[in-house]
Image (cartoon, rainbow, N blue to C red):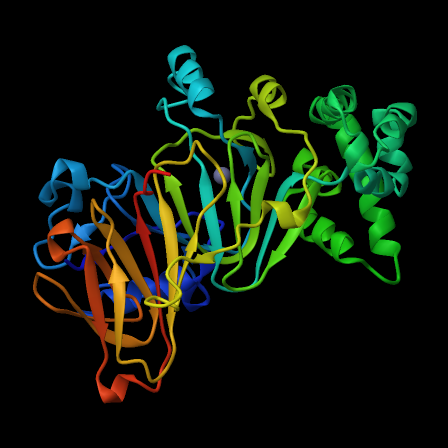
Amino acid sequence: MELIGHVKNYEWGKLGDESYVARIAAANQTDGTFVVDANKPYAELWMGTHCSGPSLVKQSGLELGSVIRPQEQPTYLFKVLSIQKALSIQLHPNKMEATALHAKFPDIYKDPNHKPELAIALTEFKAMCGFRRYTDIYSQLQNWPELQALLGADEIAKTNVPEDEENYEVREVMRNLYSSLMNLEPEQLEKCISSMHNKILAKPEKSSLDQLFLELHNDFGSDVGLLSIYFLNVLDLQPGQSIYLAANVPHAYIRGDCVECMSCSDNVVRAGLTPKFKDIETLLRLVEVKSASPESLMCEPIVKDPKRQPYTRTYCPNDPWLLEFSVSMLTVPPGVNDYPITNGINGSILLVTAGKGTLRGNVKNITVQFGSIVFLSSEAGAELQLWRNSEDLNEEFVAYLAMQREKV
Ligand SMILES: [Zn+2]
């Protein structure tokens, strides 16, 4: 059945037609009820049954959750994001921590669930995540006497170790450095950032990190999150590349459009680039300070069935705790008129981002194109066919398919 996604107009979203979310939403609601306002931010499109933004069945207007069977209720929330201004630096607790935090502070941690996230770039996508290699952090900090004075040059020097010498003690020194950073007094922060800002402005040639500093400074002023760019990896993803954010890994989406899938939870511990509440104590206790190379944070998709489904790549994060979802990207090239699509045991949600075709299964055929969102119920069958007319064949067909993860 066809769905209408729920649009969120958070202020960090891209404006008007610049936003992928707006373009998808406008194409989805072909009856003209969705009009894109050039001055309005369109940040997120939600596909699923989350109570803060449930998807509606196109034909009836009913909420998706009310018309599907209990076992078909998605264990995940599927989204499109269009980001103009960075989101807060954050991490998500694991299940055990989430349960404890929810019991203790139900107003802040509203549910007992973990929130692993997978983001697949739709356009060039910039994100910050995971601690850099320690030698890299060390060399970044050498450029800034302001930070050395505040954090202690001797302490910083202790962390200058290669990956194979990074042990528990060194990580605790790093945790303490990060802790000192997060606990700086507002005046110290203001002075430090203003001095760094002036130096960067005066540089005749600015590095990409300098540019990022200036952009974030412009949007957030003297926010402590600004200094995280020297501690965390900054990744530039190309369309199709993805990152997986396991529990406790600090991250922030900075700019671009992506498809995102996550388990249903609202548990966020914030660490900067936000005026919202920062639970520093919990953050410093949970934050994963183990260094990670940018490559190790990326999730390489695999072709599970190269013979029958050579154009289906599945993102399978290597995380035993992730049970709620997996996402596949289908890129069916021009000229292929018949292609099998595997459905989840408990159904799946399909989002089409290019091309046109007809879905044939055990239920009524559905014509899909850019902007179509379809819930494939288990009744539709374990496998559906994407069938394309001769006039649809000169285009590539691209879609993203989210479903509950098979037991591994
Ligand atoms: Zn997150």
